[in-house]
Amino acid sequence: MPPVYYLRTTALSLIFATIMVTTIPYASTGLAAEKPPVAKKIPKEIITHGDKRVDDYFWLREKTNHAVMAYLEAENAYSDAITKPLQGFRDQLYREILGHLKETDTSAPVRRGDFFYYTRTEQGKNYPIHCRKQGNLDAPEEILLDLNALAEGHKFFSVAVALPSDDNNLLAYTTDTTGYRQYTLQIKDLRTGKLLPEKFERVDEVAWATDNKTLFFVTENEVTKRQDELHRHVLGTASAERIVFEPDELFDISVGRSRDRAYIFLTAESKLSTDVRFLPASQPDAPLTLLQPREPDHKYFADHRQGTFYLRTNDKAKNYRIVTAPVDQPQKEHWQEFIPHNPAVKIDDFDLFAGHAVVSEREHGLERIRIINLNDQQSHAIDLPEPAYDLAVDANPEFETATLRFRYQSLVTPSSYFDYDMNSRQRKLVKQTEVPGYTPTNYVSERIFATASDGTKIPCSVVYRKGMKRNGKNPMLLYAYGSYGLSLPVTFSFPRLALLDRGVIYVIAHIRGGGEMGEVWRDQGRMMLKRNTFTDFIACAEHLVHEKYTSPNRLAIAGGSAGGLLMGAVVNMRPDLFRLALAAVPFKPNAWQLFDSKI
Image 1 (spheres, rainbow, N blue to C red):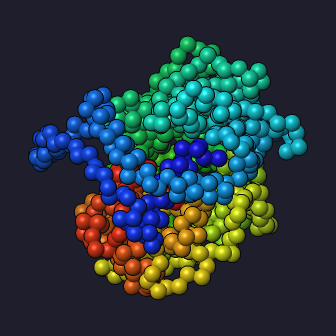
Image 2 (image 1 turned 135 degrees about the horizontal axis):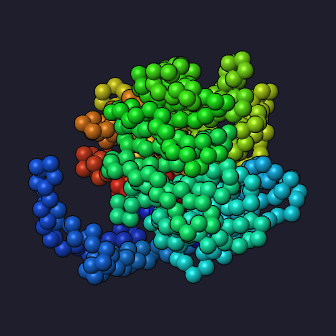
Image 3 (image 1 turned 45 degrees about the vertical axis):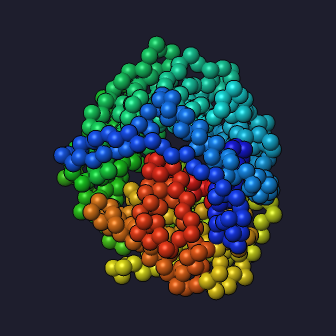
């Protein structure tokens, strides 16, 4: 279950969204009675690429400055004071949201060899418990990590990686106790329950070699947080060997392993290009081999199956194509077409199994999973029932299988996990999140399109309680991101029910700059065309008003991270169009994922 502080933060966001767009007058809340603190101005001149600008608030970056801490405390005191009249409503919302959460629950189990791995939660506890069973799901439970016990004495606790070795005897896991996504790697012997002496700081991705004693892991720079070093460590030795340093500040590196367990891949990636190096997972001391040198504006990603590399590449393919290459001759001149480029379909990812390839695609802004039988090259797509949804391949550690685990959800369907037989095309629901007090038939989802100023059709995902009348009187919360080619998932949210049940319509605007409609969609909302992101959002708001879903005095808008930039832009461009703007952690990388999951 989410921690208590998560639900309380959620409740506070929903309070403002509900109050400002429903019938409660602003003045009656008492929110305008206090005067906010005002940060002092200390001009600092900054010159970048010959461009000079003055930042009056640069001093607020100084975390160790007592004046900064005093100002933040004044902001918190102001927030507490103006929201004090809402305490009763806040408590009501918190209880209501908590009532939709099944606190004692179990995740869908995932098979790794002879073991089934899963997490479970217990009522009243903030964190999940990582467990496994051997042989079958009726076997005795073995607790691997109890995050509630590990979190004792810490204000924050999170686990990012929990990766068993091939023989399932060891568990490499990473923990963060700061909230700054700064993880410590440790290894637990699952046979004895004891921790090994190794401990490494600032670790991101981890990959095991097949010898069950060699670990590869990526670390981040302590100042920039750029993932720039790859280390190799043999259990029982005194230290880890740094085998790669990425000097280019535009690139981050990541490490992974093919599903057939044959190769370790190191991928260096910038916004516009990549390169991949590899070594046999059974030869962890072998040197890394460069697959294809990095080139400007060329991105490619590698996987392996039966002596052949499969590469997703944007070479001569804006929306990507898939090629194959022999392991001993992987360079571009030896590439053979496997899936040709289709300008109307973006290839987001692909997964390889012994007898099948699974391609994750986007067409018309909607996700699709396509299965290719590698014996006869016949393909089919998984059928889906709703107009707007979130679909993804889930954890599938096993290579020799015809069963695909995928997850599906929508604005009205809770998160659901299916096992899909790639041969018979039969699916089995393994797990659907139970939401107490929720009746799906009480809600309606739609997918509509607004028209941008240049004529481009902008998709919007809409959800509301059944019985809504398009009379312009409905409160609405409109959310968007629109940056870095990231596609906003159309997900279910049980805290969002607090809005829907009060008559609020919730809408996701899939504006340019995101990746919903492919790479061209992304390019049309970045760099010199970034303004399209803002005008697309305004067009969506205008369309929703014109079609009488809502009206400007009932319209709240929200965005986080780069979506916070979006909020600042649109309220300055069209202050008449919105009643309230919620800018969550403006321009903090990836924060939109945290914020959107709350509403």
